[in-house]
Length: 376
Image: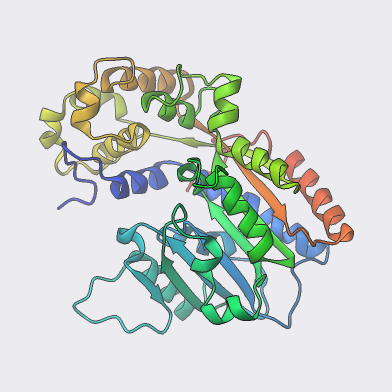
């Protein structure tokens, strides 16, 4: 079966997400912002401890390819130990580790394949990895990332904590009436980060007429294609993180950057087929058309049949009309993203000053970044 084959009665997130990764340069641009920031920090004398392995948390780790890209080319002389977590079985299985024996007839989760290859080839100076299956809405992040022995002895072991496009699923209030975002950030700064640790969070913003605004409109989260100030404040990941940091009394530093989704050159040629799920069989071996279609479904987060049956402005026909208009005007769909930096509550004033200096340099360098500048 074609890797982007379409089922009209279900929404297949995994296929749609891979189409998004292939058609956007968001991961590439995010990694460049990340590399620049970390290299500048190391030039300031931070993250340069050669005597200890750098323990890295990768929250919402997905298939593991993103964290490898983000850490590749950064100097970690004593090596890296990555602990990741996700709740997508198709990405991580039930959880994997470096020393795990995978049976020949057992389906290998993508993350094990990616991280074990990185360990073998030393694409990054990886010494160990441990990936846990867990739901952040049901369990505390520290309980998922630490062993029982570590929790008993001492926590605050992670020098780097990454949360890359994982906040979107945490905005529901928990049983203590604190938002899932606030609860997670509290655990990161209280239980995960070392005194000199840094948390780096990457998310797309519900801003102007970018991809998230279109997606949230089609999914009935906002009233119009362009979010108003209240909708942005309540729904956009960068705003939720900023608000939660304010509640917790911690600083949050922002580095905005832009990227883009670029559909195939023949997108308009396929639009008539895209409008009718009963014709999708005509695309059975057309990779570029199927990938475009999966990208459309990623924006809608609904099955083809569900989008087709919706004759409102949030349905398939209007979504395609908007995309055709945007591509005619701009050639791509913009992604407004933000890297947000959070430090330990025990970070020294000297460290804070150095981080603030580097943040200002990066802001001047990357925003507004031309979304068409850098392509995979």
